Length: 369
Image (cartoon, rainbow, N blue to C red; front, side):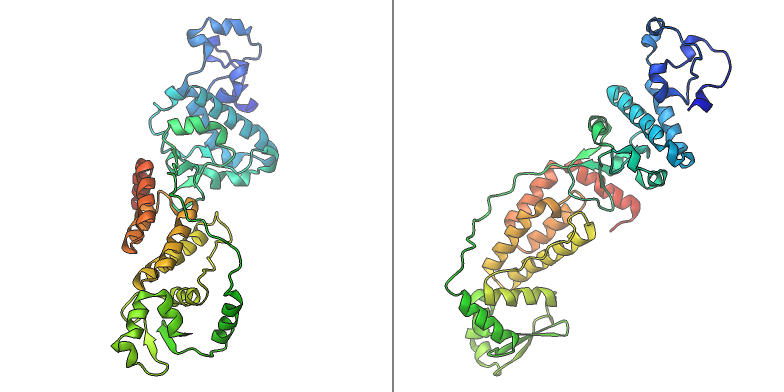
């Protein structure tokens, strides 16, 4: 800063930066070696307050020299960035009028506010535009990123510039279920053991080259589809242990069929969980699994499994439903006749309508499907 702002020369007071504004102006205005009293500046136009245009030019300069900052100078550099953000926030009405500011990558989206823990190597990967930042999102995706701790103090400025805040509509009330042990639990454990050993199974479901054994009575008890088939003429003509290809004319996968057979034996679901709820790919894998299970339960008319899966999706909707995927998720919910979940997606879409449209535009710009 001193190398730039303290070069020898002459200038009038109105062209110099008061010491109080040095951190937000030093690249644009010289510093006086012998500054006058602060009261002198008050007599100047705007009381000596720098124009937002000069401060914005200074911010752009700071961003442009990020690769020249040594680790020893990072703390001072970031303090100047923070002071510049803060000044622009104090004058946010003027800041929003700056052309191109929404698209400019000038916002350091750093995890930490401890300046001592930040190195210059973090800068390039942290620069973002307002267009791609948001508040109150569960995780980062390919088209949006949560504002991290370094930017949180400037939320009012970022929101004034158009940064979205994800709105979460209220979820419908979910059914309360007891976790008490049931009288049939011991019997079910024994039955599951026999199934694992391949004992007393009388039907095999073939899907994706997997052969999954089950018992017709159990399947008929939870699935109206299989109850109708096994108890009708079609079922009476089956072999003693038939192999039924359930993937031939459907888009069911082996994981989904396995979940449905497990449910027929236990009445419960071991729900998949992302190891890291902030990993967009892990969350997407779990969401896909649950949507596949919802669709499978609908196809096999397993009403209780369908209800439980829909409730699971509603319960976890804070991490599953986002502006960048809500329309696709809603379409899949409607396809599986999950009316409550589809309605929740629609409420979310309406509450974040402009955010959803911006995500679609960013996907289109980046060629993301």
